[in-house]
Image (cartoon, rainbow, N blue to C red; front, side):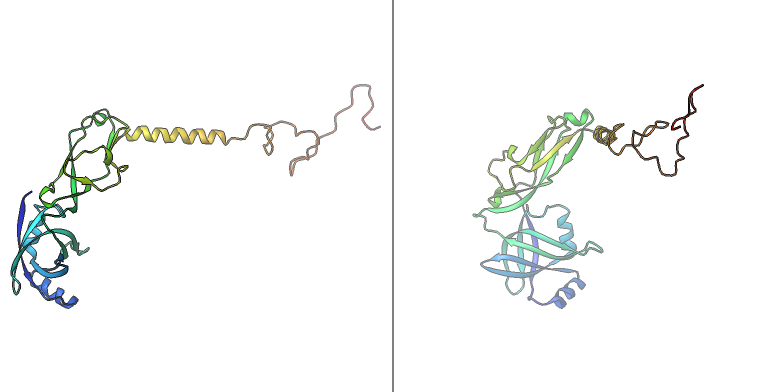
Length: 248
């Protein structure tokens, strides 16, 4: 893969005050880890590094670091982490990892989707779950991106890490993780949720005559049941013509 040249300079390992002074003169404090067992503090020019980040991805580009100062030398490294100020997104600190071109490294490579899934053309929704994959390989074999053809995917289908075959690269992510999937369209999912809610509420209705159920409007209370609270007692029935009143 291509190597990008980057200028840097030695710096003394100081406390926060030293890092603050570097930023005030347009430089970014950084550390190169793993250089012959030691960590090397360096500084890079802020504007140059911001321009560099516009053209490379973190972790999958080899940097040819041209180090100037008391210990002038060249070394190969990759960007491991970039710390930014949450208020203005300016770069505050950079972690680099020194690499040996003869030894394998682990890096994150962006996944680039190619094509339009058949299921999306039929109204489905595309869900891109993993935008990067971690791979292990020799530095010279680090890809700038991983293209993934998704044009054949239908509704309900997905691509997992286990489905990918990348010659020369070892994928370190869990094989069961989903990279991309095509879902049913949103309104179908919403309709299913409404149907489920209606079905649930229907089963919750108390059947007439069940324990605790109120009698139907106008119906007499069950035999032996106490009259409803506040209800007037029932009037005695009038005797039949020629008959005697009840109880006499």
